[in-house]
Length: 165
Image 1 (cartoon, rainbow, N blue to C red):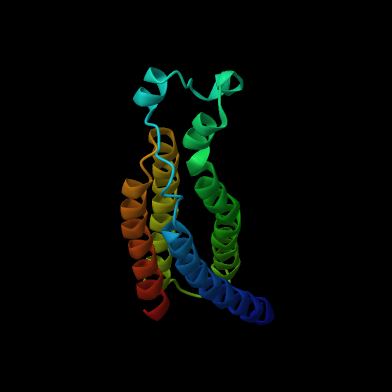
Image 2 (cartoon, rainbow, N blue to C red):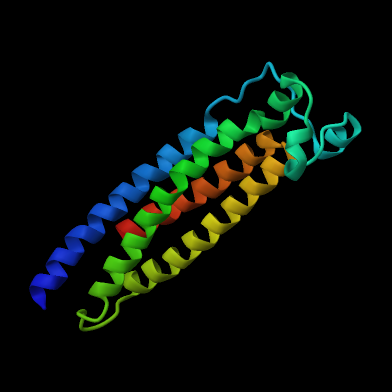
């Protein structure tokens, strides 16, 4: 049992460190520029200009209209390709923590804070993903950048607080 606890603790610390680093990378990915030369269509202006919503994109005429509507897709694709790795590391933290929990003789305050912090991080990740979907549909990426900066700041603060208590 001691060997399992020691090895799980090593993995847990490693994944916590990687998760903190990935939070910084996630913040950097959200700060990358979107092509400013192309204006975004909002959903209302897209309908007014004859650009239909996503199921009927085959009917779009002209490359310029497609570029305007799809400009945020590269930004969205960068973040969406990164998120499974981010969530997998979070799942690894939860798994290693769950492996260590039964071996511990007593649950201390720091372990309780880690459990609460993990649940809060999962909730904030869900909120961040929901905001990403809204930003893409409304083509309001500047608002998303401000919101995700706050969310990632709170996540990073939780990681630091829980790691050092």
